[in-house]
Image 1 (cartoon, rainbow, N blue to C red):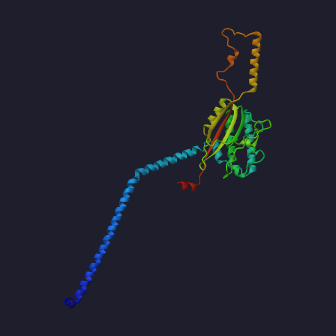
Image 2: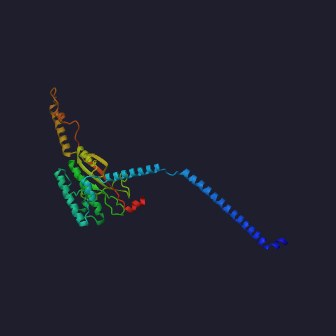
Length: 339
């Protein structure tokens, strides 16, 4: 102690050096602890990264390029299908670009002009039409459609014009009726189809406004809310099978996106012909009973057999249900949300 007291400077210096060394040792220990902790964290994160990499491998440049090419092909196919569903030709362009009337009065006169033009077309094609028919628009015999229904009714009028013109070109004998689905105001619930009104004789009143409409079978329709809108028509006419064939072949050209949903066939018996055949058969039986049967000469063929064709032409009533397909146009904001 005496020596330390005799050298105070040396003693203080040594003490300071010991304190610094001790502090450095403590600091080194703490730093090593942090380094060890950091190393463990890095190791854990590296293991987690390896696990994620093994589960969901990152796409290679080739995979990314293939996915982009597939997306481009899908978009091109979609554009092609959308273009096809818009139809082609002059009438399809007319349906797409035609502006509907601004108010109910203009819509009324537009429908009146349509009725007169269809009557003229039927007369030129020698197709019989029901007296007083308005070709599916009897509802508007005295007034036009409500303002919120004008766009739908105008489109139905254009489509009905195409269908009737096509049908008249197929040369049926008689148009029975044209019905359409009931238009519904935007946001309103569909209206149930009422029972058709009947006349005093018990038959269906052909000129009843309710006979303008029919309801297509939900299992049959292609309508998808928010994606696909459809407009349904039911056309009934009388004629021979070649009229039906020509009409369907023209629809199949897909100038408009029309899809045939059903075809119903019902034979039509001409009462006058049936009565005439019965009278002829009765007369032949009476003559045979009075004078006895006659035997044709050798090699002769009965006149009835000569006149009878191989396949009888049978008049039928055809009812064709058709749907017009329309893709719902989405706004740019909706497209961005979907993408």
